Image (cartoon, rainbow, N blue to C red; front, top):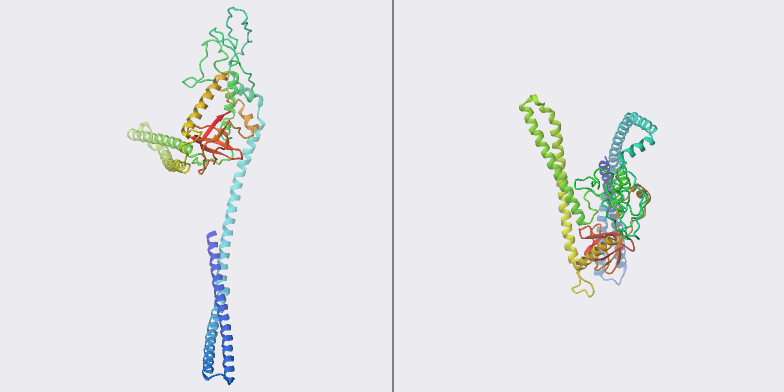
Length: 498
């Protein structure tokens, strides 16, 4: 109906333009007739004046009379043309106002009446559907009200405690170890400082135990180490109580509780650095190399699912053949719904595989074009006076980073596994709304023009804040001092971690 209304309005506009064009032609012919009449009158007056002038020659008089006759003839032709144009315009104007426009308005009225009829029917169906759904909604709300009234907070808390409590005994007091006298000290199972094998543990600034509080934001414990089979590492004592440095400690239990209570917060935390970015299905919000890797992962997952569905379909076909040969084992028709469902799943997965293959091909071509553009656009100096080439600088910076990481790891006390994993992630998500802080700073060695999506431009020698290290794809996320975050090539930076 929208298209039909647009067509009718265009038809009326064309008719109006034709009428205006006819009126312009009428005005032109009218002005031409008026101009020719003036010229004819002027030529007649000139001929009459020369005829009465005794000094004028006969040739001049004849010439003036011929000119007057020609002008008079042209004025007569203009008059006839103006009369014909006026008659044509009056006919077109009568057709426009008495026939053409009424027909267009009748069509618009008919279209609008049909639109009103359809709207009325639509609102009627909507009202009927609402009336049918209202009792269901009311029943659901009543059930929710009953369930809310039946909430037992104490019982729910006790169920959660019973589900997640470790059952370990609390550690005993730490014994005083006197190093001033050479004497044999018996190991204590309850001591946190003496291992269970009886050898005294070296204590010093690098081995001191930091205080850990359940709601602290620093020195948060990591989850317990996992065995190769996926479970927690076995205790040092097979039959006795586990030592405090093995198995699950109470803080690790709290970490597991936080993961089971709010599993969605981890994903929210991962999105904190890229707040405001629109996440798309084809991962176009990521840098080209990361987009290609993510698309490759999705394609492999879809291929695995497709192979699984194909195998399941083959198994159902074999089972159906067995049922057809031996009816006492089962009804072959009972397998038809499952076979149809697997066929639908196979078709759906094939379409998804084709879609991801197309996206992957586009991403790979974009990666190649970006590499070619970066090589051709950012020409590097042949002999940098005081800096190494990007590859060597990146290797040196990476080696510096590795040495610095090793130095920091040697200086930091080896606390228990996973110091950085938060215990109460829900508190962090609810109250930590400040933007992510830089983990270091870097200096741009070369100029880079961020042309693709997700990248950012930088000038040579510009100081930048390091927001995220290179994940192995050759890109590092940085923040400019005047605002704006994005990815730049790692080989174009000299990085210093905090």
